[in-house]
Length: 104
Image (tube, rainbow, N blue to C red; front, side, top):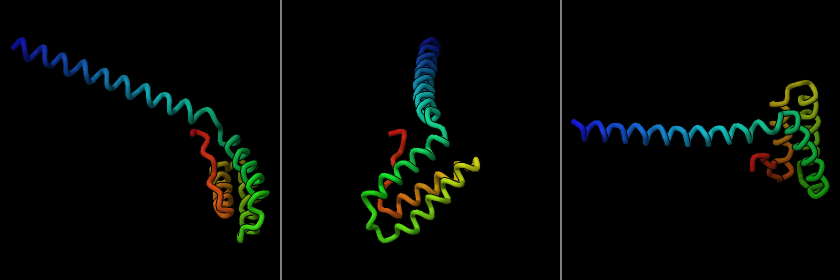
């Protein structure tokens, strides 16, 4: 009976240590994601689009990409940042550029 109790205590201790480690890793991820706001993300993507436009001006879908950028900027300005971020990311993809992820 005593061996069972000792084994049980060991298992419970191990589980609590694993739980604590997992919680710390989730806290770090949450801190990283909270470091940038959606408004900042809008600005970053718009800036990235402007830079990409200079180097990818000969892309076949420049006109469509510019239209998406304008829509995205409008969404961001009207407090609809999630839609704006999607529009700006799609505009970059039309230019053949991968949007830079801020948590890299």
